[in-house]
Length: 317
Image (cartoon, rainbow, N blue to C red):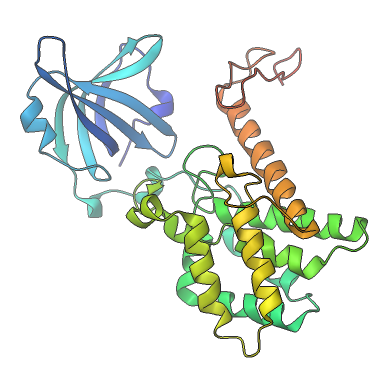
């Protein structure tokens, strides 16, 4: 049973436990000698590590994504914790508890999924309702959809994160569609499920959260378009105009080319989808960042991606 987790490690402590080898890289010192840089992870986070000795032996023990038993100590490097690895051996996956190594949503996955399905059963546009029924009738898709993360790092980066993200977005979309006139509620709700549907294949989330080969080579937008066409072929007489509009929502949901969208949003529903996605992902990411910093100070450390500190109040709350 795993006893030492990343979040509890402190400088000067000994390490003797199992981790996921998230990354492994052979590097060279100035004198030409080799050393290994590693990223070790469990459900509480990840930590950099380095091996200075027996580099060739340790480097052949395991590949990225494998479980490894680490013996070493925790030091500090440039103000951050770092594990100094003395020994590393491969660990049999059947001997470890997967729940120790993958962060997961705190929500009930089945309840979230049932709530999402109930929302889409209220859709009044038969082709869109039938399309989503085709997705939800696919047992393999449903299993992946319930487990997939929504991202590797920035937001909902845990098992069940994609489902949690989509449900939250659907609840927002339902309210916004009722607030503004002229919004096609059914199309917006369909876009919520479909915009990130390719992430069920973009990520590898068996032992760690990382990109799959298909994810790195193709990306979730292109994968999502392929999955959409596969399911549309199961719906007799699906309108071509609706197909184009749904594809547009998938390709434009990042908002701009510099953020990964081939086209900017060009319909009201696509614009709303983009901003609902932004709201939910940013709020979740910020809340996760704040929670990870503890509650001692009024201000968080600097968030490098968003370029600011966040204020928690005078009590650090």
